[in-house]
Every structure is written in C-alpha cells, then in structure tokens.
Image 1 (cartoon, rainbow, N blue to C red):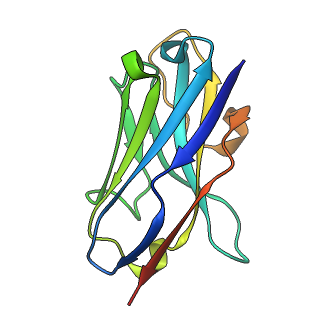
Image 2 (image 1 turned 30 degrees about the vertical axis):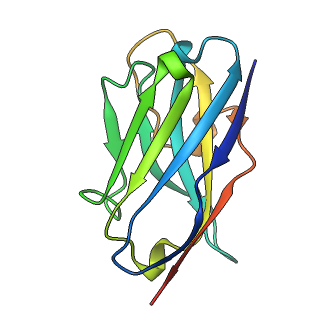
Length: 126
C-alpha cells in the first residue's frame, strides 16, 4: 500500500519550466515503479514518462522527449518530473502513478498502475 500526493503545478508562460513532485508514503517506495500521466480538459489521459523502481530505466512519450525528465529519490520517498520548454499543449492535470515491482522495469500504460495521486494542474499560457 502506498499513498501518492502531487505538488508543484501552477501557471507558467510558454518556454518556462516547472518541477512536479510526487510524495509517497506507506511501503518502501523503492519497491514501486512509477509513472507520470496527464489529462487535458475534455481529453483522454495520456502517458508522459515512466521510471523503473530504482530510476535505472526511464522512458518518455514522443511529445515530451528532450523537454521533460523523470527522476526519483527513493531515500526521500519522492518522485519528480522536471518540465522545461513548456508549451500551451502541455496544459493538463498531471498525475503520479505507482505499481509494485521487484525488478528494473518501466510501464508506459495507465493500465499497469494501481496507485494514483489526486493530480496537480499545470497551465501554460501563450
């Protein structure tokens, strides 16, 4: 069992940066692979980035590759999503997700995760 709480969202101009945090509590975070997803208003949730349980493997959606970086600090039970060169199309509610894992794997689909945070709003103005 793990509880996830996102923070760090807000309003930023196009070209700016934000760093989202995902604070985890409960079981040892190092036993959970994690992912970031986003959902724009009126649209379906889409994959953003994923990390294996120790951060050794990362994977990104083509739309954010080269601009976003997923990372984690298991000693602090916290995951991060650094977002640079933000675009208006990045505007969405961003969700942190986790799934228990015992190997260095990544999961790029929402169906793979069974723990979710409440989300944090990111708005990018043009």
